[in-house]
Length: 155
Image 1 (cartoon, rainbow, N blue to C red):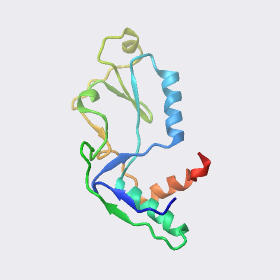
Image 2 (cartoon, helix red, strand yellow; image 1 turned 90 degrees about the vertical axis):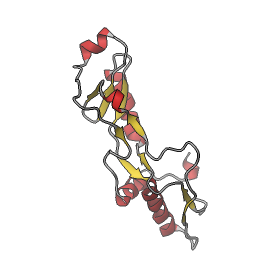
Image 3 (spheres, helix red, strand yellow; image 1 turned 180 degrees about the horizontal axis):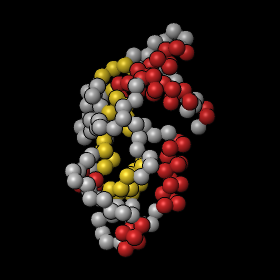
């Protein structure tokens, strides 16, 4: 909004993208279906941080009065992750896939969990992370941002 340059720390960095509607929907799903002890993980799309920056740059530059925003790579920071991981291979062995979300079951024995969920033993562990999930394009990111566009005064 101020026309400052956009900074990224690594061009290969990926992140999940969740909308407010998806977050609220997941809360309701957890409230309705949870037995106790589960972790509900939405099946979310991901994006390259550079693609988010490109979408923001395009949106700003189309409406700016002459000031063109640039994207600067400032280098990765200490402790920063290249990709986010929502389900690890270890957790995947006790994960149940539902419609648009996963349910990671607790490690401890809870009779209600075993009664509620058919525990599936995966032959191979999997990882649900921002580098393996469905990747959004710059155009798709722009569509999402435009739909949920807010000005600083709206908050």
